[in-house]
Amino acid sequence: MLITATELKENTGKYLTLAENEDIIITKNGKQIAMLTGIGKKGALLTDSLIGIIPDPSVETKQLRKDRLTRYESTN
Image (cartoon, rainbow, N blue to C red; front, top):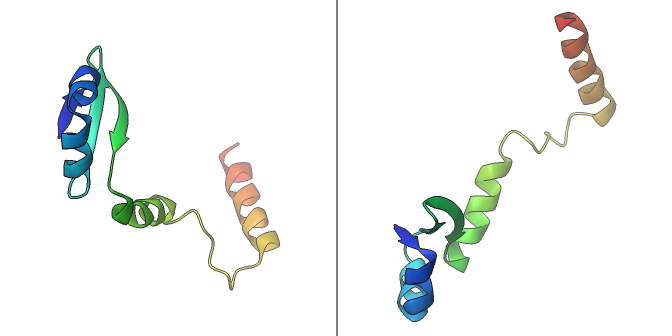
């Protein structure tokens, strides 16, 4: 759901209730500036955004670094 910052200010209680079940994107001057989301969804959003960033614990950090450096050396 998209709402303006003014709309949020005038109806805060309404949008806090709605945020429990759906994300609310807040716009200001036509630009998206923030997202209001329920606390129950917070964990899922954070973990979804970290997929592929957190390395497999069985892989050593030194090997990851070596692999990344090798990838950049081959493009030069």
